[in-house]
Structures are given as C-alpha cells and as structure tokens.
Length: 407
Image 1: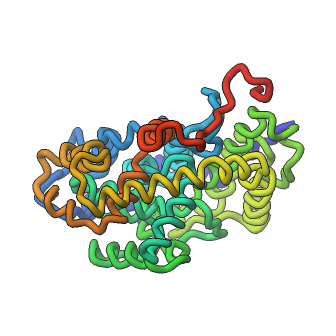
Image 2: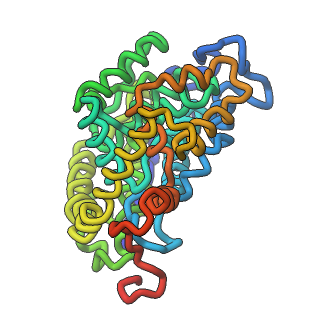
Image 3: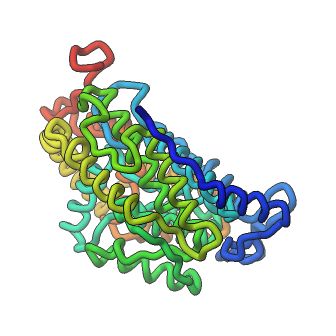
C-alpha cells in the first residue's frame, strides 16, 4: 500500500500566511543579480525575464533535440515506455520547480539549470561516459565528466551568452553525490568558474568538490537524484529486471516512483522552508543512501546490462575514438569529424560575435574527438560506426518489441 506524506499543518499555515503578507524568500537569487559574459546583451524585459532567456537559449539549441535519443539507463531496448534523457531533464525540472515554488526561489533559474544539466552527456548513458573518459584520459591524462562538458557545450561550443548562475548550477549538479544538507557557496565570476572546470579535467575526484553558488542550484542537485531513483526502478520493472518494488527497502520513503517524489519533496520542504539551505532529516537521508545502494545493486550493476556494455560497446568506442583521432590529427577536411561536427558547430555559431571556427580548429585533437563523440545520439553512434567500419564483427544487438524477453 502506497503511503504519501503531507506537509504538517503548522508549515502549511505558515506558508499561507507568508504568501498573504507577500513575504519573499531573502535567499532566492534575484534576476537583477544575473551575470553574463556580455552584460550589455540579452538584457531582461517584461516578456523575456533574465533566466527565461537562458531557458529558451537552451531549448532552442539543436543539441537539446538530441536528448530524445540518448540513453538514460537502458541502452539496448527498443521500448517507447523506457525513459530517455529528454524525459529525465523534464522530470528534474518539474520536481525542482515544485520545491522551488514552495520555498519561494527563482523558478526560471531552476528550470534553466534543470533543462541544460545533461546537454553534454554522451550516448549510452553513464557507460558511454565512463568509456569516453577512459579513452580521453589514456591519451591526455585528463578526465571527461558530462556535467563539465555540458558547460562546455553551452559556453564554448555554442556562443549563447548563458549566465554564470546557470552554468554554475549545471557544473555542480553531480547527481551521484547525496548530502543531508545542501548549502551554497559564493562564486566570484567566470574566472573562478573556469578554474573549477579545469580542476575537474585534471583531478579524478574534482567533481566531488563542487559546491553550487545558488540555492536554486542546490534544489536542482537533489532533485536530479529524486528524479532518477524511482523512475529507474519503474523502468527496470517494466523490462522484467525486477519482480516488484518489494525488492527494495521502503523505509519512510516508499518504493514507487510516485511515493519517492512526493515524500522526499515533503521532507525537504519541512526541513528547509525559510532557511538558507536545503535539508532532509536523518531518517530520509539514511533511506536515500540505502535506496541509491539498492539501485546500484539491482539495476546499474545488473549483470545483463554490464555484460552487454563490456562485450558490445567498449570495442566500438575504442575503435571509433582512435579513428576519429587520426582524422583530427591529420586535419582531414573530408572526414565526418569535419563535415558533421566542425561544420555543424560553425553553422550553430554563424551569428555569434565571439566564436571563431579558425580558433576552434586549433583545439587539441583529443578534445575535438571528445566534443564530437559526446554530441552523438545512440542511433548516430551506431550508424557512424557502421560507416567507419562496414562489415565489422562488432555490432550492437537491440532487444526488439517482439522478442521473447521484451515485456
């Protein structure tokens, strides 16, 4: 039996009274304090406020379209009911906006961070991210992390003048690190942001040190976890990988997606309203840690998934990376790297004031390869591999709609 918690009567009455008296949250980020690289451009107006501009810039990028064909967790299934990354970012945005609304935070900033946070993600989910990082590190001694690359997409590969606050929230969204309490830490400007980004490239655990500069980014960070915990279980059950939600410890949170979203939302609001931080109580934090561990045990480290990834994807990533790297080093203008990526980036920046394709061509070759491969959707990756290596023995086998092990 599902159990849904409710806000206490006392807190509900307090929120209603605060709204009646127009009391605003002093810890919310103000639109007037937005920082952009070019402050004289993209100025707010009545119909396009400060962070609405960031939301729209992100949504209108062609890279945003690619969310629809990027794996969330399950790569090798043809099943329209399974989450893709497009749904994940929307779900994060919805949950985060719900919490932010009650707390009186800047909802446009929350939405911008949420919708942009995975725009630099690789094809084939975290398996693809892990493999690309291993290859990049092997060649350069530098690490690839999708949150860092999402900032690169929005701040380097596309000259869209995205705000410092949105980029910082995207950089700091690490959904693999749960905390009982989330506090923001001031960020002085773009120079400091760039220092943090560089640390993530050169330090293996650099992303674990990141702290968001706004409470809005803290909200998005915890909602990234809330959004995938229950939904990944729902997808796993749909694919027949779980017998039931009973495989999981429910604690105070429950086991279904709906319970998890509602109950974490309520607990965070109870412990965070009117405060300069986000917090959940000890019981919920302990349950969150246990829930993540169970997801890893039952889902992310599922032998079926791991075997498929290692046997099929790894050799494909390796061969593709080194082939594209050869084209990058040789500056092969007839290669797909140039025709489908470099020319594409140049077109995206046709009206940009600061992007230079000549300067971009001077980028270190491995970085060009990473930029290209991270931008790929699952289907493009497969087609591109077949284009590069026709008749190769390595190929992905998708479980189709009518196969016996499809639910």
